[in-house]
Length: 226
Image (tube, rainbow, N blue to C red; front, top):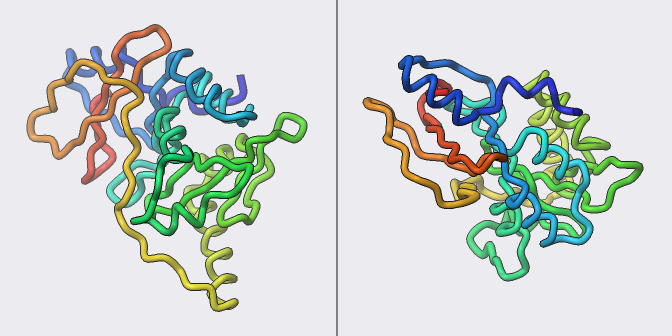
């Protein structure tokens, strides 16, 4: 297991049921949702090769958000959205930043709260898939990227600012950041009643054991039922 340091942030149906029963609210730094083998396999089969490190993360942790609060919703895409974003039939005529992020041999897999997109190399090097922002490498592997980002929420924006500043000095225009993409559900599941008095939005996925996993991402703080 490579990502045991994130296990406490996985939201399961058992945690949700317990929270509803006890009417308890917890605050977590990250929010992850486990995935079924079928969900993962659908994405793996869509790309050849598929990043081995991303497959491992999906299997061990799932998908979801890093550093959740009012200003920070940083998304590691679910398999369905991964296929959708990187599919040849999809066109981002309204989002030049996504268009610029697409690189041959890479997959867009991560979106920051400022709508900046990261890519991961599809081909691994000794079991590692490098991470890029605007064709510039920011980490030698997915594991090192996540480990650093988990420990320091500012590390990613430091790398991004450094690359953007270099582009500005070269006279390369920067895109206007907009709310243009929100990841989609992995699968249709039963509806979960919205918590009373919440400003939340639904987010659901299918768990490894086939149960429906649901939670509510709050847009005004990082409190939610788990």
